[in-house]
Amino acid sequence: MTNTQDGELSYSEDCEKIVDSLLQEFTIRSATIGKGTVIKRALPSRHKRLVGAWCFLDHAGPVSFPAGDGLDVGPHPHIGLQTFTWMIEGTMMHTDSLGSKQLIRPKQVNLMTAGRGISHTEVAPDTETQMHAAQLWIALPDNKRNMEPNFEHYPELPVVVKDQVEFTVLVGDFLNTLSPVQVHTPLVGVDLTAQADTKTRIPLNPAFEYAFMVLDGKARVNGHELTADNMVVLKTGLTEIEVEIKSGNRVLLIGGEPFESPILLWWNFVGRTMEDLEQAREDWINHDARFGEIPDYQGKRLEAPTLPDQMRASK
Image (cartoon, rainbow, N blue to C red; front, side, top):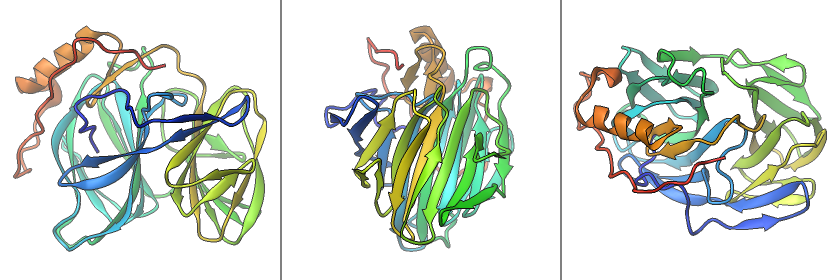
């Protein structure tokens, strides 16, 4: 997916609520991608720009649509990050400038490492009529942000069941279970799906900050209500948390060590300086080889918006 909000880094609609010294609540805003697909955008927000190295989080769906009217995001570039797609319902075709072409199905992950530069498309098949997915971006550390681009598809993720909750380990190590997904900073990502109305206490790494977001239904985190319109963020220092969740409801947990340095996130680029962003924008406009081409796509490439004169670093 792509950041189509003209490179905005903060939003006036964002609202922060301090619940206690270790837990904060943030309002999630809506945005539009592709041909008009409405999504919930949790990161970045005005009050919270990163959770560990997680720097972007879109939640699309669940939504149904006529065949042929699904997501269609034309060729667009990325630098300095990894895109992480978790498919819950529906299918989507990923095509990139490396020549990768991969249909992602439910319970699968696509991981694209942009590094020094890549471009890709995301298109729902003409026969597809539903979509439910989360896409996140992971900022690459300084020693990896100019690495060679890469794409990996993960058709199976490990699952652990505890207290009638199915935990799918998307990234990192959780409940002594390691995901195969390759990332470059200490991170965790987990899908929690309740098999019955239940409460569970889950262990946390005190060196990590965390965030909870509802993917379906609602839940409670340490007694605080979690809905489709808010995100709960936990500061470092916690060793466990209680989650209450109804049968069939689904929650996303992400976390990681606070990121090593501030970043600049603009449009589809993660950089450290304005010069990084300016050069990437110019290279995209000029069809520079760093971003390659996607010859099979029949529509237009996305146009880079105007770069703001001033930007505030994310941290």
